[in-house]
Structure formats: structure tokens, C-alpha cells
Length: 382
Image (spheres, rainbow, N blue to C red):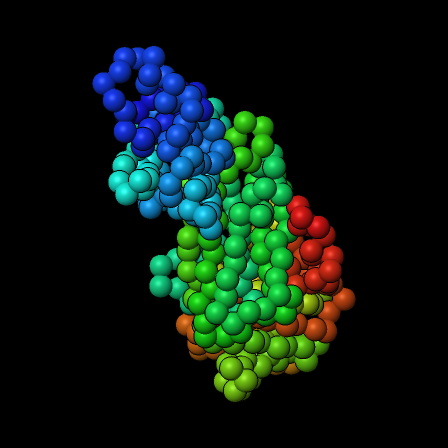
């Protein structure tokens, strides 16, 4: 028989006679050979971060399964097989059924409990992950950027749930750059030609302030070749290598340096994306004002958020390799710009030297401009 109560579902495994309710109540209270499932059958608004527990008074548990609308739930059986406990959180606003089989006095009996978890007023979801383009291979400097759909109250709890697992291990750390965004970078770079897995058991996670995670995430990132560009702004050339092999030495014309905004930044840049064509507009100036320009160029590869690209510029080919005349971008010949555009991967490394303007760590993906020990201090677990 099954007795439902606040502590859980109790399955009485000891055979009962033909007695009335009083006898049955005595058997339940003695719990001789009984199985208890918590949460109890019919319970509503169960907290998603609470465990499912199954216990047997006498005998042993043979099997426990959990089925439901939400995330798959597994658990661990105690060594003496007298108890079982779930090992993860539950999906909010979902229904689950626990089925437990126990053996006592040579007989196998089954108990079940069906319950529902609470639907929180505030559910936390991942709005987007970078990189996440299907089939994309990224460079060895690629950060992992996770943005949530609302401010996270308990950043430490959420960060603990985030797992980055590369095939070729390397040290890395998360840093929060706002209440809704966290970024992972490695101490050095990823090893090339490997898979990196990002997982997070967020469903049912208590994220603070009455907020619970809505769904898990599980994503695989493919690291491609190690493509590194090194260039000296004062010498007007850059060299591109792939897995240590030199591909091409490319002449360029960088920022003319007459103002800070027209000075190309030195430092470790990461290639952020590409556009063809891309429209270049003078920052902070309106049409008709001195210094205003609006130019459409081809084969643009973004290297910062302050308007720096590599791109084609036929009009400066004559000084590429000998003088800096641009507004801050690296002007390349149309042929070289297209070649670079075609081979680039987001997250490829570009190391530039030779100017007096340093790339800021959060100007685009300039994260390697920050010492790793400093970067780690932005973790909620620091």
C-alpha cells in the first residue's frame, strides 16, 4: 500500500493482513520495510534546487528513476543501497515522476511520486554565447563570452556551474564585465586543432533574489589553426603565420598619428569579425564639420571597437610599406586585403607594436592586454 504524507511517499513492503485502518496506520508509522520518496506524491511548488531523496527502512533499493518534462535527473546510490539522492537541480515549472524499486523479504515492490516544481517569477536564461556560429573554426585567442537575459544576483553560484573543458588542457578564468555578462580567457592561448566544450547545469540553479536558471547549456567550440599576425606600425609591415609557418609578409599603411583617434593601437588584438563592404565614418563629427568623412571600403577585418580594421584601400597602395597615412586602420592593397579576409578566423591573434597608443583591455577583445593575475580578480570566486 502507499501512504502519502508531507515527508514523502511511503511504500509499505511488509505484507499487511485484513485488518482495518488502525493496523495500516501502525505499519506506516513503524515504517517496517518502507520506502520513502521526497518530495511526496502530489507536492506542488517544490524548489528546483532541493534534492530528490529515496530511503528504505528495511531491505535494499534496486533501482531509482526520474522522468519528467525538464532536465534529465540522475543520482547516487549509497553503498548500503538504503538511500538514493539526486545529484543535480531540477527544471523550474516542470513535473517529475520518481519510481523506486526496493527488495525486502525476497519480494520486489515499486513506489512512485509525482510532483511539480515552482515556476519562479524571474527565470535566468542565456541570451547568447560567443562563439556559437555553426561550423565555425576560431583562433587560438578566442574568448568565450556568455551573456544572460537579466542581471545575475548570485554571480558565484552561476560561475560555479560554468564548465570549460578543452581536449588539450590550459589554464583559464572567468571575469564578470557587468551584471549580465561573463568572459572566459586562457592564460596563454588555446592549443590549436581541438574541441572545447562549454557546459552549465543552470536549470533550477538558485541564482539569487528569487531567480532560478531556466535551461542548461552544452556547446562545443572548434579551435582551428594557430594563425598569428605580428606587425610593427613604425615599419609598416605585418607577417602572417599559420601553425608556425610563414604565410605572407604584407605591407600596410597605418594611422597617421596626428591625433589619438588617428593612431593605430599597439598591443594584442584579437580578430573580431569581417565585413564586406564596411562603411567608415569619422567619430564624433557631423557632415560639413572639419575632419568629417564617410568612406565605403571592402574586405574589412575588425580588430577593435574603436574603428580599427584591416581593409582594402587602393588609393594608398603607393605608400603601403613606407608611410602611415590612414585614420587608424591598416590599409592593405585590394589583393592582400581579400587574402587576409578570406583566411581570417575570429579569435586569431594580431600583435602590433610601434605606436604610443596602447590598446585598452576592453576595446574590442583586447583581453590579453590585462595581466592574467589581474584578469582572475574579476571572477566572482576570486
